[in-house]
Amino acid sequence: MSKFELKLPRMGESVAEATLTAWLKDIGDTIELDEPVFEIATDKVDSEVPSEVAGILLEKLFEVDDVVGVGQTVAIIEVKGDDEAEEEQEESISDEAASNESEAAAAVLTEERVRVAKETTSMPASTTATSERFYSPLVKNIAKQEGISMAELDGIEGTGKEGRVTKNDILAYLENGQESQKVPEKVSKHRSTVPANEKVVEEEKSQTSAVRSTNGDEEIEMTRMGKLIAKHMSESVSTSAHVQSFIEVDVTAIVNWRNRAKDDFEKREGEKLTFTPIFMEAVAKALKKYPMMNISVNGDSIIKRRNINIGMAAALPDGNLIVPVIKNADQLNLVGMAKVVNDLALRARENRLKPDEVQDGTYTVTNVGTFGSVFGTPIINQPQVGILALGAIRKIPAVIETDAGDFIGVRSKMYLSHSYDHRVVNGALGSMFAKAVCDYLEAWDVNREI
Image 1: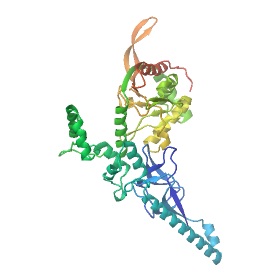
Image 2: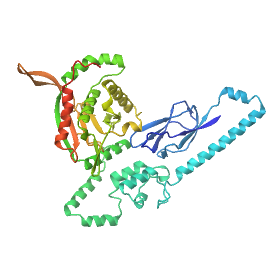
Image 3: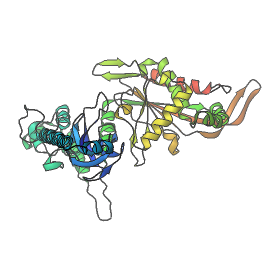
Image 4: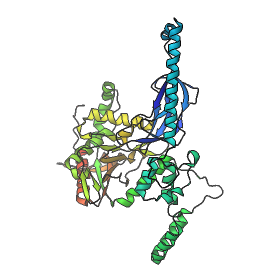
């Protein structure tokens, strides 16, 4: 028998640690090759970690809600030895003794590694901290970014192991309790300097945050992802000056073309041909035509993105949203786009996306028409400066202009709703970008081969 150390795998260049959210196996359970052993969560995505070997789970080195660094050993798995090798070992007493000594040495080495791993998880991440309480690097980074002092951090009630402050604890503190838990002297000083009208606003906010459920109400705690989304959306509204432009698009030619091509496409490619890759192709072409929509704001500077990476908002079974990213979308043909869209959408619904697949987006598209909405006013996905909402495709009576005169006909139409950051995108650019998407869709070649 030998022992295998199951470590937290590398999950992308920007991911250094993750929170262990659930154990899928108990000590003593049999584990098959590639069978998931535990679940982890990052700020971007949840994921299962499979075993690289078959064996029996001997030891768990972390508890649920612990923060694990990439490369750290999370579990010890006992691996069954090869039957032929065992028979060879039984041929002589000396060989068996040597094998036993080797296994004993390996066990001692493993125990030492386990001891070191446990000591590592219980040691403070930084010797410069002024508090004896343990805080993970992730919690410390969040506290530093949000300007939370060590004294303030010590006052946060932790729900993790031995009262440890988890990422969810500090995020909940930032969202709900920070203002009410500040040092009293600072609060009184602040209130003495604000105008009377601002005091009224503060009182109204205080009353809003103090809402409690009454008899018959059901109070449901937000999920971890729901809390992150709420925080992300609130920050986006307070960061960007949101402006919207709307444009109606005649997609009759696209609807008719897709109806003719979808069956042959599915037989040949083994993929369904939806409208989404067609719209993504149009957005990619518009971004290439108007590169100043493919930017981010960094303080007083603008970062012009080299790659066109389009985020595709996808609804999850639990009601939350996630935004997988189509990398280098302008370099894909329609077949490639369809395959990428279908793959990302499927794995998003099954919670199998990798962290890198929800990062580095430069522009986002959301399809509100899936739920029957005619149009919407989406919130920008920071640090991007624009997001396009696709409305429902509807058959409506419309005026059709011809050389022989105008007449009324049935057309398939939809609305595009473009939200953009008015700090850096003016109305002209925002409207021209939406018009470019519209022009491309309306000029669709009904004879196009795919």
